[in-house]
Length: 330
Image 1 (tube, rainbow, N blue to C red):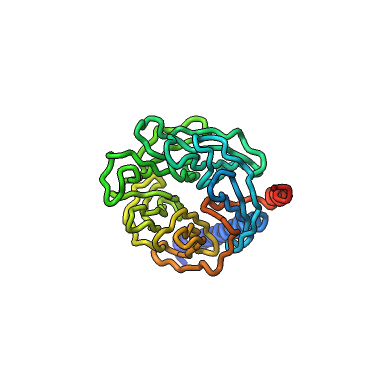
Image 2 (spheres, rainbow, N blue to C red):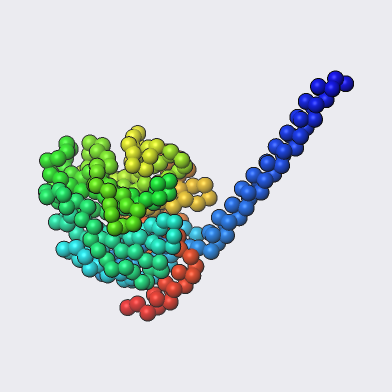
């Protein structure tokens, strides 16, 4: 046999062996990560932040082990003490790289120029609530509605988006000038310093209740409420960055008079909960691709009076503390 050919054959065999070894290691690492994820899920439950009308009592909570059936934890766990109206609506919660959960909420129907903020590690003990006057630079602003938190892990920052009306600023359809909302945002790493407020999206119509969903790297979905009078329903749009631009706005996937979406992912599917306030109930749809949606409202159970907020995950240790606390709430 040609000596040069023999050497090449040996090199090829060695390379194949190393490739198989690397593949085995990769599979082992993937399997290990999967086991960690499953362990984390088995050690945690879903927590739904909510409120009760007329929104003057504060934060209420519910929890679920399967993402469908929710048990009431009662409330209030944090009373509304900031803002002119002293209300708490649309409580949005998220955590970053540590065990601290950050929450923002609507403090006023009209007249406010910011939103409320507080943080916690157990949903029982909270930092001193404060106002974040994100629209104080706009003297004509009518409101600051439904602030929503998104943790951008790539930039290690929190994005806060909300809806505000500034009369005569943008084109409108059938909306009154004081009900013609657009979406704005700011970002922060520590909830002490914030970037300048900017416009997130102007799609040519009144829009509120936006939620950012990350599907993968460079793949984001914005779940939004078209708040124009004939619609007032939920749609989705798509972007390659959490701050947009978001394009290809879909047709509505919910009926008339729906709002307040929040999204969880499990078993390869996304569940979108929303407040079906026209029917005075809560509803949900399931989707794999944000193009086809299946109504699964018959599968979900929520406490009476439950209103829209967000869903996060907490440890079972935190849950145990909340259950104990709930037994002592009035």
